[in-house]
Image (cartoon, rainbow, N blue to C red; front, side):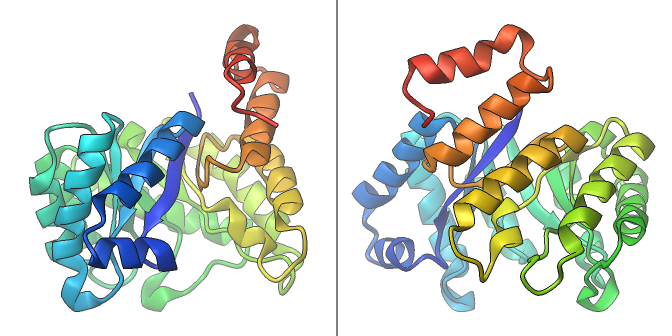
Length: 267
């Protein structure tokens, strides 16, 4: 099953920030419900409107989100304190931490939470000092270092979701191809590891972004991508996902595609 991490509960979005600060539970509940009905499999919660408000916002948002759905939750924050408070606020459902990287101290600070609360974790292929990868080989190298760290902490490979980091092709034309090669290389080297990437970064700065996002998503699924951080209410992107999974044989008897079509989830 393809993992759809629904991205709309994010306090960097103007309306979500305003609703969170106003403690407007009805607005957040509606946003969650729309994503669940559109086919989300995880709800991402990012409370980072400001450092001083993030912890309180995270706990409040999780209360509203958990009342609205039984889906697993992705806790999205660089702060160990915010993540720990969020994990303590959960009702025992499955969770995923977004994210660790090779930046100094980040994995060391967050992996104990992954172990203590038995969560999954997203690993960004970002080097020390926030260095972004350029080539597929560099992405695979960073992924290997992340997986070495998760294994050393006792986290099974199938609880790790690697993000090889999508970069915009408008500024760096080769980066789409390098990302796709990286998916293939990492999948071969670490077959039990999952993937979870923010697909829309590829189209930044270009018109008709959804067309590029859909094309890129199809190519990435072919290479082995099995999860993405996307807006599931974009029915065109979801249609591309379901259609591609069916065509490449990752949807047995096309049942997920047929179900989505019957339920009017694709366009």
